[in-house]
Amino acid sequence: MHQDVTAYSILDRSLVRRGSTPAAALRETVRFARQAEELGYHRFWVSEHHSVPGVAGSAPTVLAAAVAAATSRIRVGTGGVMVPNHRPLVVAEQFGVLESLYPGRVDMGLGRSVGFTGGIRRALGHGKDDADRFGDQLTELLGYFTGTQTAHPGVHALPAEGLRPQAFVLAMGAGADIAAEHGLPMVIGAGARMPDAVARYRAGFRPSAWAARPYVVVAVSVAVGASAEEAALLLLPEAWSTARSRVGGAFPPLVPAEEVAGAEMGARERAYLEESLKGQLHGTESEVAVALGSLVATSGADEVLVTMNTYDLDRRLDSYRRLASIFRG
Image 1: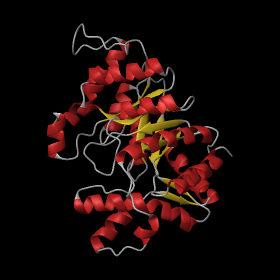
Image 2: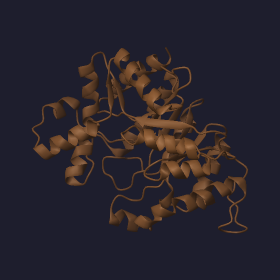
Image 3: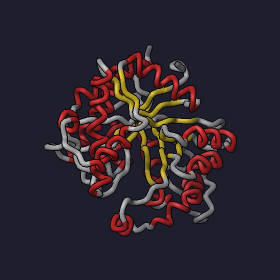
Image 4: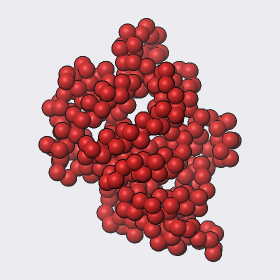
C-alpha cells in the first residue's frame, strides 16, 4: 500500500443526529477537527448544503474559519464552495481573508453544484444553467488571486490578490476536464466512472500557477471496526438517511445504526439503502488496508478524502483512530 505517498484527509458534512440540533452539529464539527489533527490527518474540509434539515453545514467559509481557529497544523478548507451559488469576487474575498488569517493552511475546494430544488435555487438567485458556466466562473475567481481577471476590469479582490490558498476542483460530471484545463488538483468520488475520469484528467492536465502536475484526491466512505460486522454497522445511519431522502425528498437526522439494522423496510427503501452503501469500504484494520491499497493502485490517488459519518460519535472517532493506525503504519 502507498502509505508513504498517499495522504489521508477528512470531509465532515456537519450531519445532525436525532435528538440533537444543527447548532450542536456545527460545534461537533469543530471538536472533530481538533481530534483529526491529533490523529495526524492531512486536511479537514467542511461542505455547503442549503435548506437540508439534517445537514447543518450551509456556510463553509464561516465554518472553516472556526475550524482553523481551533486547530494549529491541519490544513483546513471546503469540500466545497459551490461557485454557481455565489459571485466569484465574494468567494475570492472570503478565501483571501482565510488565507490572510491562517497562511499556508487554507484549501479552496470548489464545486459546480447548484441548489437541490427550484425553490432553493430561486432563493439563492441562481438557476440550473449557472452550473454550465462553472469554467468561466473558475477563471474569474482564480484571476482575482493572480490579478489577471478580465471579467470586471479594474476590480480587485482584497485581500486575496497575490495570495495562493490551495485550489481544488470537485469533479462532478465535466469537472475532471475543467480541473485539467485550469491546472488544478481534482477531487473525485470512488466509483465505476472514476478510473476513466482520472485518466482523462491526467492526459489533459495543463500545468498552471496553481499546480505543476496532476494531483488526484479520491473521496470514499471508510469504516474500520474490531470486526467487519461492527464496521458495517457504522455505515448504516448515513446510508439510511440518504435512502430516506431519495424516497421522501428530505435528508433526515441520523438515527442509531442498530435501529436501522432492525427497521422494517419496503423494497424501494431497501434498494436505495443498498445503493447508498455501494462502494463504501469497511472492515478490520487489515481488511481496510488491503481495500485502500487496491483503491490507491486503481486510481493512482495522491490522497484519500474520507467522508464517513455515523450516529455514535465515540464509535466514529474509534473508526478514524483505527484508520489513522493504518496510514501511520
